[in-house]
Amino acid sequence: MKLPRALDVLAIGNINADISFFVEKAPAEDSEVIASDYEVFSGGSAANFAVGVSRLGLKAGIIACVGGDDLGRRAVTELDKEGVATDLVKIESAEKTGVVCVIVEGGGGRRMVAYRGANSLLAAAAAEGLRKAETKFIQLCNVKKDVLKEALRLKGSATVSFDPGGASGELLPDDLWGVDILMVNELECAAITGKRWDLGADAISRVVGKVVVKRGARGSLLIEGGKKYWQEAYDAKVIDTTGAGDAFDAGFVSALVKGFSPSVCMKWGAAAAALKIQRRGARVALPTEVELTSFLYK
Image (cartoon, rainbow, N blue to C red; front, side):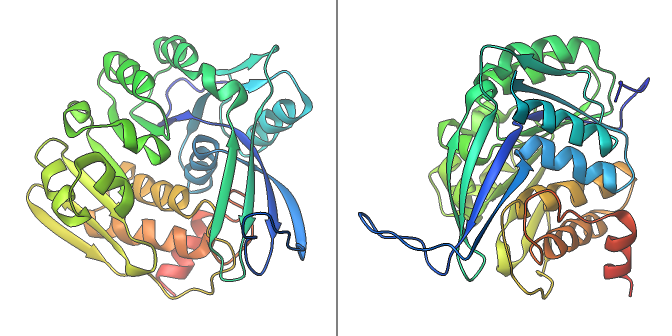
């Protein structure tokens, strides 16, 4: 799908293929377990997020890299079908598309092994794409510090939201100057600050205007302007937690771009995550706007 004249949201980050194995319990070292099933899903935090906000009614695009292989072509085709603008997806013919092996345990928890492949070339693609795109909002998904710096340098008037994911360990609070919204879980918050997560969130809120901490079944917290908004997690049968954080981000950002209050943004994030974890797969399980609003206001 070609870029519309102006995007509501531009996601920057990974596109992957997820190979998910469903087991009762992950194997110990030097042991083997038998999977009850496996499935191959399209994934990657940025791609998941872009699909999430598109399903929730926003005009979304993505900057990412895929390999010149069948997995890459399939990924772009699926994003096109979801209404996500893919003009800024760079095809790296000499690379393989990123792949993640996901082991999903009986309780819905998961362990992952990632091969980055073409994702490792994102910085150059981000710099090129940001010069071409027109957007109100940039969502950085699990990107390294070099991509963060490029986005902050080239953002123009766009709001920048950052979910560092696995890149949290390389960040310090001072790296976040210029970021408008930080979205992390408890471990990531602690990794950035070296403090207990709640103390870390307070510290980061002195640098970043909005700090969102996702706490899984324990709910979530938004700190904005010195005020704290606590959101309980909604009751849900946990089938697969893969992509729950991406779903939360998509729900929160969609509500924010639509102009809703902080408390409603938190509800949208929590609802999107609750709906996602009840189904397998990081992306196929993302809710539509009708599903989300029906869940919230039933």
